[in-house]
Length: 82
Image 1 (tube, rainbow, N blue to C red):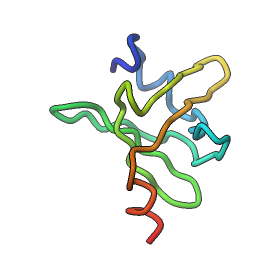
Image 2: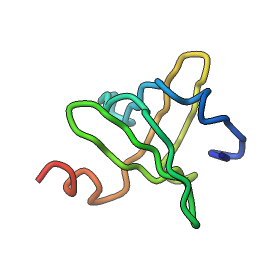
Image 3: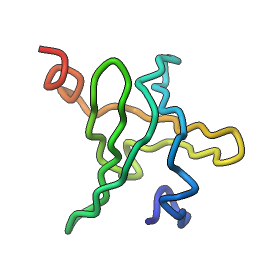
Image 4: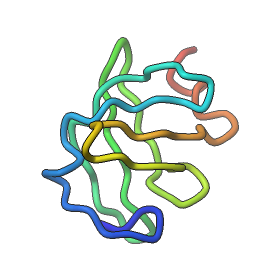
């Protein structure tokens, strides 16, 4: 898997906390689904989110801190929270 400009093993990302730019913890990364276009992060917290693993969405991955910083695409939150 490559995001952003670096390759990661799914096992390294498993259990990382997924946090938005505003500091909101969405949950924990539980799986990564490979698709034809890009991988998709499965994040489980109060809700389950499927977040596209793209450069525009995944801003930072800190494996040692077990933290992934994301910028949710417009409308994604509304899909899961309505």
